[in-house]
Length: 99
Image 1 (tube, rainbow, N blue to C red):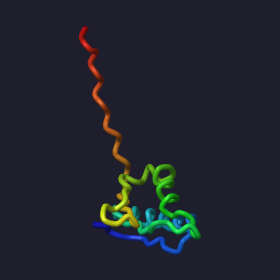
Image 2 (cartoon, rainbow, N blue to C red):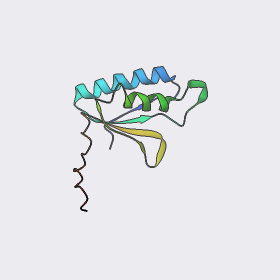
Image 3 (cartoon, rainbow, N blue to C red):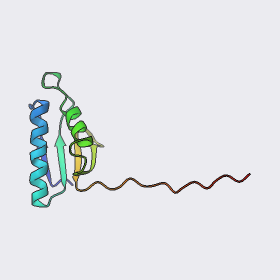
């Protein structure tokens, strides 16, 4: 269950990104980890808020986000788990084929 949530409705993409970044900082200071981001389906007059948040998660915030995914029952919100990302699983080396 989310420990906090932020509603980005009515914000421009830039405003939303700044608000989420501040909330991430606040939650990390408070020792909380799970944030619900309510981004909606995307209103063209405000820009696509979800798209900018997705981009920030993959780039600028990638070292602070462990998991980010759209909620299964609500495409208008996503769950963000804060923390150091887990290393990608490594594949075992393949054995050479026998001839």
